[in-house]
Image (cartoon, rainbow, N blue to C red; front, side):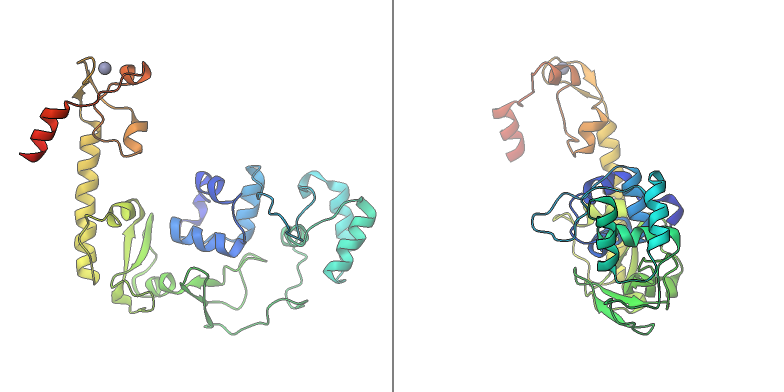
Amino acid sequence: MPRGKGIDPDWLREHYPRMTDIDALLDDCERDLGWRPSKQAVYVKANRMGLRKEPVAGRGDRAERTIRWTREPEMEAWMLEHDHGQRMDDLMAEWRKRWGFGISRGQVNLFRASHGTQRRNSHGGGRPRVPVGTERESKDGYIVVKVREEADVPMSKDNWRLKHVHVYEQAHGAVPDGCVVYFADGDRRNFDPSNLVAVPRRLVGLLNDPCMPHWHDAESLQACVALAEMRSARHGIMARAPRTCGVCGREFVPDAAHVEIGNVGIRTCPACLAAGRKWKGMRSYGRRAELG
Ligand SMILES: [Zn+2]
């Protein structure tokens, strides 16, 4: 697990502001990036990057302002002094009385997590504790399993893991860097280790392409992965190949930006594009060539 690497900032910038629920965000992260950060890691990183959740109309428990505890020593000191095990609602009311604005549960939780003052065994309305090995279904249909009694990072759920990733690691060792675990037969309930295959994340798009053959087991999936590797390599070669501009006739290599959005076959040079001249193709010849 590439935990040290941290969460991809671009991914977070895209997903954090639109998230509705931190657990769902972590599920998405695990699916897209292949590993599950702790909640605290997400909050801390988002906070450092200055990201905020987009306001949702009608949400009751929303922070009225962002508190960066490290920059508010007075508030921090107040919290350390006044957060002594009363009910969350009471603490929030005391806070409002003292500081003149509301504080959210999330902010209190984050404070407690970062100050080591969370109360693990008091279940003030939280979920009842379930034994290790308990499974439940995540919102997007994957099974998650409780693998340890306590989370390593307080307030996180890092003691719950996607079952297929967990089973894969038990059977085959750590998921290779940059890979996601696939159910080879497509059945999200088949946790047989032979059905779990690590697939490079950069090939996921190609694997989902409609012109890719269908796979139905580990062997056919591996074959598709090999095919996707080849297509990816061919794409890279074609994307960097010099070509002749259809407008001005000069030879050019496309901008990386064009290649990235999949425009491998671009036939207009950057200068002509910038001038608003785009090669439209030789319509009649082009069509005849397609037919022939
Ligand atoms: Zn040109």
